[in-house]
Image (cartoon, rainbow over all chains, first blue to last red; front, top):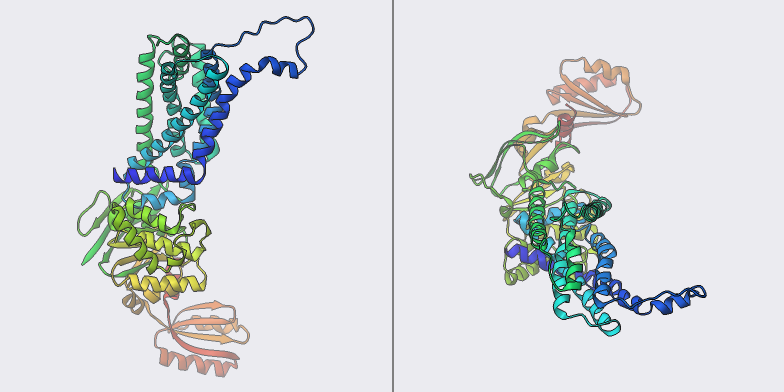
Length: 259
Length: 301
């Protein structure tokens, strides 16, 4: 437990020293705030780019606040995930490559403490980025579009975080198992993309899929309620996260630190 | 007292045997050097002892018992020590101390102590990324010593250093050896001869020779006559090789090392031959085989 704390503190310190703790939330803020702002200014933007052809009459209703926030989360689902995965891909593999992992593990550190401290570090930066970005987007949505209740925002934040935590847990797994940083990012993105696509194509058969959590967030934002299929998907995602962590630790235990 | 007892320790990678059943003991308070050519299995052996690699076979007994986790008794310096370059030297030592379950207050105290000892006090606040190779090596030794290990394992501690850095590290090891048992690998035989009490020579994943340094040298020592010629008298040497008192001849350019049985009589015989055959020589020396000769013999065998 003590070692876990020491290692977690090191993770936080490292993120502060290399400014990750600043730039990732900043990117999330930009990605999020873009949505309400561009929705609001869409008519002006269209005008600036030459406008619509003479005579074309297109109604452009302002989207609802819930729709804007769904758009924000959908940005996070694409670029946000990409940035999280790219920033986390070397979390174990880079330390393995530099050899510093050998120095750390030559001290009596339990393998689980090492992996769990890495995981806690990833979860911290993920939640921090999502929270700051989402709150900023909420602020602009309230300002420019319409107000959305705090309750819905926080509930959707909670559900969406679980999806992102699932994504970074996968990144941690591949970073432990594989060597090159590039292949870690590739495998994680591939799995996330396949899972999302298959889930949206075969919605009925994939009710358990972690990727449905993004749909549940959307539904919650619009209606303020949860679908009945939420609970199994939620529990299943939590179970998957625990399972992936368990396997990460087991594989890490038997991996060898050859320089 | 026996500190470490290793029996039949082996490591396989697929089909290849990196370490092939080695057995040896380390006495408490001794400084033991592990010699061997590149690829002989030194690093693999050291990593198994320090808990970074799981052996495929064999047992490691530490102070008579087989521990599940040896790491708290052992300080390990890898061949290429690497750190978190964004940390300062002091930060890294405190971090390493805390990983070894030392509380913060003691960790700070112990780190200061070791920084002083390895001569890094002036650089303790600088980022490790800016350290020179020698400084990194010394920081590596400090982090290995931080939890007062019973056995200090150093993998090639001096091989990558310049002569000055090498001297510093060797002097440091001589100091450390007063209170801690040391096992270090090297292929610089001179260093091994200089500071170790016992030696282990590995070849092809096996221990070829082990024992007290002096005993080993004495046991395998052989008188040698070293002759430097002006031009290489190939024919004559061939002729000499067939004589009964010559055990072996090693020729390197114009220099021949002739292993003999009785140095006084045999040198007389050889000298007489040289005069009679009118062979011009530059030097004629009587020597004993060194650790290097022994090492070459083992490795080439």
